[in-house]
Image 1 (cartoon, rainbow, N blue to C red):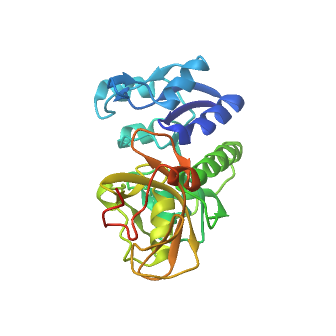
Image 2: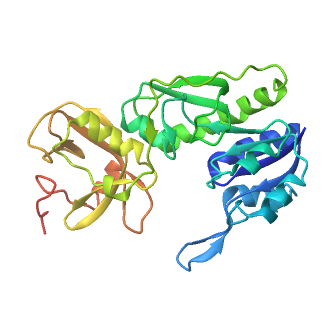
Length: 303
């Protein structure tokens, strides 16, 4: 099949590689290069880099609303478009251009967690499972009918980064199944009940509130890892908390019970991995060799 691939971040790369191995990709659409790094130099995203390495034609318009961009897209003569975390709204003219429409790889079991951050929100909400949905796109936000879906359990210590990597591989496999069965698969409309919106992560959410129950604190840490990263202040320094697990013990919120185990509003959380500013992520035992914890987080530390 003639396929246009539309995606930008790491999550989309396994699907790009899978589709490239099975079909003819006539164009890759991705977000324009963005300033990154200390020098704030414009850098292409992961999909752009991988597509270029594969020798595929890459397009990165700032918008698809103009008539010229829509005509260029239609001129590719695609049978279908595969869309994975692209980052731009697709106007109706784009949705209608491929003969078999546009298929989206969405990282939730629709209608659960429509929107920008389904992986993070599923962990933060305490969902027991999530999955991949292959959806035929329409004008609404993640409201289109579902061709295929597959559930997967969320691990008790799994971070958003861990889960994203697993779901990316699942999505790459399922999109090949969807493309192979495109002529016979029956799209199933999403149920009206059970829909929820996975709002984009706001950095203001990332500060840990130790007065919350341990389960909530643990889910916040895992759901925001690796980016933007939940954090707390220790001795006036912002420490990013990247991995955690529920732990035995109780105390005043923020009280250091032992090692890097911190009491919450109820229960306790053990910090497994953390990161100091400008340094690499470290296991808790390693980071504590150079970081003295106060008796209670939020208080001044020794020295």
